[in-house]
Amino acid sequence: MPPREAVDERLEVVVSESPIAVRRRRLTPTPYTEYNPPFSDSKRLRRSLTGDMTTTAEWVQRCWQLHFGVSLSVLMFGYFANQPASKYIPIDPTLLVGQECERAFLNVLSSSLEDPFATVCCNAVNIHGICNKTTLPLGSRLSRFPEAWLIPLFPLILRWCVNRWNNTIQNNHTMVRRLVLYITMMLIRGVILYRGMNQMENYFHSTDASCWYQEYLREDQATCYGRSFDFSDHVVLYMAQILPICLAETLECLQQPPTLPPRRILSTQTMTLLTSMNGGINPDEETPPKKKCPSVRPLSVVIVFGTLYLYLITLWGSYRTTAYFHTGPEVFMGFAVSLLLQWPLYRLQCSEQPFLRYVQDWFFGK
Image (tube, rainbow, N blue to C red; front, side):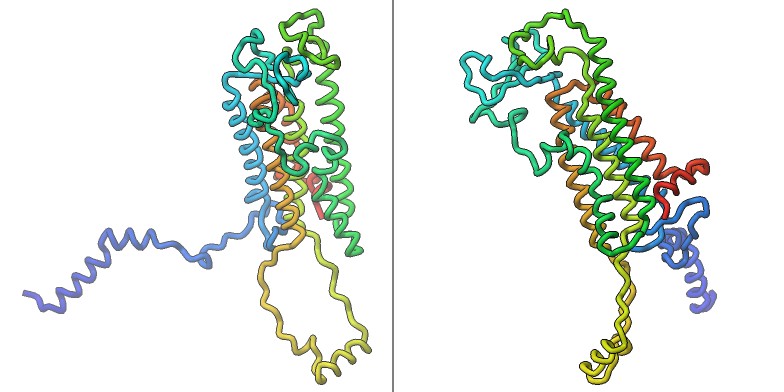
């Protein structure tokens, strides 16, 4: 029989090489200091919100992907809320006999006035659903001029104001180029995607059609207004102009946050006076150095919260448009039309293709 010490040594070897020990060793997380891969040379480096260097592929593209996913999800929720399908248009409330209405809506997809939910009368009792007039600040101004043109530019306007306050010219050239780019997108949305497509809809719309609700329409509404296919103009406005422009400029602000003005150099007389008042000790020499740590830029925080609030009121407007005023095909057709503007902007800011790098740096470079 072998001695007890030899048996203990063999047991230790067996235990150390057991599958459980090997599995535990493999599942042990590797410390961050042991795995620190360098950034790829093919990815453009930018300065993030905390001052660290990150790549656009890691979070800028994810923000755009989140933008597309959330936008489509809100439209899908509105589509399922609009079941069975309905499409309401505003009508003159005085035309509904026997009802005292402040506002009135009519479902153009109904076959007659006797159908359920063919009309909706909004009064002091009925204040829910389509009659709900509760809106957040700026929520009712997003589709009006000039708010629809100025609100998406608020990150760029804030950056320009900070540069003027600091008396610096940081990124002024690229800011002007992006401003021209954004205004061009707004003009394309307003002239081509709005007026041009409305003219196409009017061309294919039959003027000799008859409908059961013609007598309830207002004088400024066309014949059988709302019955023909009408892609959602509000969805195009929200998804092609307001959200993508604001998102692109917000991401650019997080990558290149505005810098504070440099510390002023005090004159010799002022420094001598401060030294004498401090007991002969130079405050700059005796002040211990502060520990370096990532700092969040205040302007970046303001822009981020402003962008999140803009998303809140815009997506709420998109949901109401989908749930009450347009059919599913009209809404998703409007979203597809908006991709003509927001998809090129996404590719311009996030693409790593060599042929787009020059254009990318021209608009978003330093």
